[in-house]
Image (tube, rainbow, N blue to C red; front, top):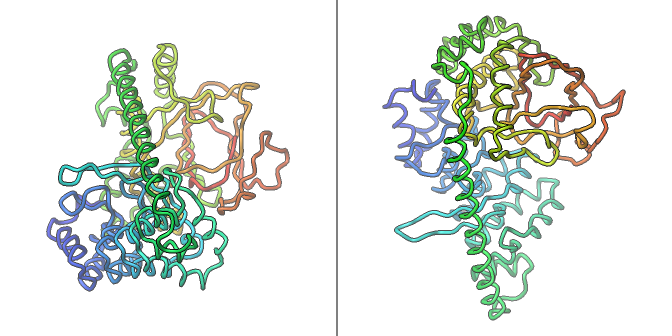
Length: 480
């Protein structure tokens, strides 16, 4: 864990990155206690906005540091504020060399992922001036907005080696949230030669039309910001009402941290504490030999392809307290957010003040350390591809009823890892089935309103029992 690294080593690493000292960065990353920093968020003293080291290198335009970070496992797809990945930062800063390093050092799937990722609407203040960054933009939109011709040189070079020409053409024609294509972004910001290169007509054409378009876009942005402010005010009113009118009952919501762990996991609380200690010191070579023995103490099952099952981790009577609290909330008349239209009987919990303390405890103190121990021991190849450094959590509960769930689908999750916990009570059915991993093709995740029996695509079927914890990768195609 970053907290266990000495301040001097940590500071040296960030100084080396910000000073574009590639040799020193490489030397420091050879130290096991520094290696975990390659996928850690920069401290605010270095950079604001949840930037990772790879983002910082691309912003500074140092392709050598960028290359070193990639060689040591940096993930270019990680997102900073506004939904920017490393390629977005390279496109925004005007450094084509970093874009080349990112694209040349990635396989086809990662190249398409980097180029296809979209930003979110966001704004910030710079020297007292509000700066608006439009959402829905690919790295190509960002490059066109900034007149970054080197970026397009890098893409064309990668295209010569890749097989995603059709994908690139589609991205160029994709509008952002301001309804601007890549070429239009270049035109609107007066990069007319770049627009002509992208197929946007001759330089100097359409100045009057562009002025009209800019004014229309400004009006749309103001309206969208007003809607966003109104939505945030309404959400804050809802949260305030929940805090004032709802207090979960039951001892499980009143326990201190150690007491809560003992209550929820009466037979496994000591191994979970040990998992947390090893996870926090995971950069030390000394923990390697202790992980496997600890993993076996959870009696895990590993059906294959990264699916892990802890058969009896939580006490059913304590989980019943959570179920009762959920039912109390359902009857309270307070606002309920549904996960999506395919989960009509679900309830989103991560923004609910009544449950946020419990959820934060489960994520940081139980689920993440436990997953690290299990994957490191039972699926080390998969563990190397997971950062175990969550930046966002989406939590919801779901109750299944025969005849009332009319839209069950085969799907994959927008997550790195999914933790599925059976809260209990008597039931039949609701088995979870798994196909193969999603491979970014539409036909790899077919819409199936009624899952066929038998199913030729099924690789594993799990029948939940109260208190069991099922863990799988988000891109593993599955359904209920």
